[in-house]
Length: 249
Image (cartoon, rainbow, N blue to C red; front, side):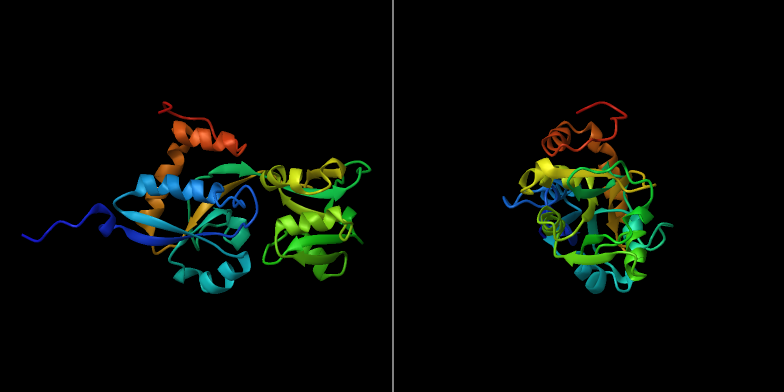
């Protein structure tokens, strides 16, 4: 009789990409929310799949791994369908939300009232991040209604605001909360939700070639709010989870 293989030997290794090189998704200590999520999922997937975490720029993910989308054979963390033009969720397989987030505008100095429209940003200098998509703002930049200057990361873009090199930037509330203390001008920043925006769920995006893995991940994500260990992780990163629909274990 042939010897039985160990559980790990039978696991299928899958690339898990994180395109955020800033807190809370990635930290200088080497342990950020990306590693926490991958470790949690690997515990749940043990014996079937093993996720290998890689941090890379969004532009590289788009050009090297998602072009064309149907050949994507991995997964990407903390994504939303609108980030990759997949609002109909036909190009990729999507997990339930890990948590909710919302895009914010960040300015230096006191605001003169909340801006009700994106058009009110006309003529300003916008600090973006290379490879990121900014609905409405990209169109304004393309038509010359505002000047867009890309930085290498959200952290660098926020620093540009602090230095007065751009008038404002856009980033999610979760990212802002994690980075503002180290920005160098925390007491002088003002923020508001992007006009007419609503909260969005950050999900795990899986290639369509991996339907079984996508189903296993969706099941694990649905159980996160009831997992005592994961609730502790979420609290440490100031992440608000959905309500547990069962018993906390």
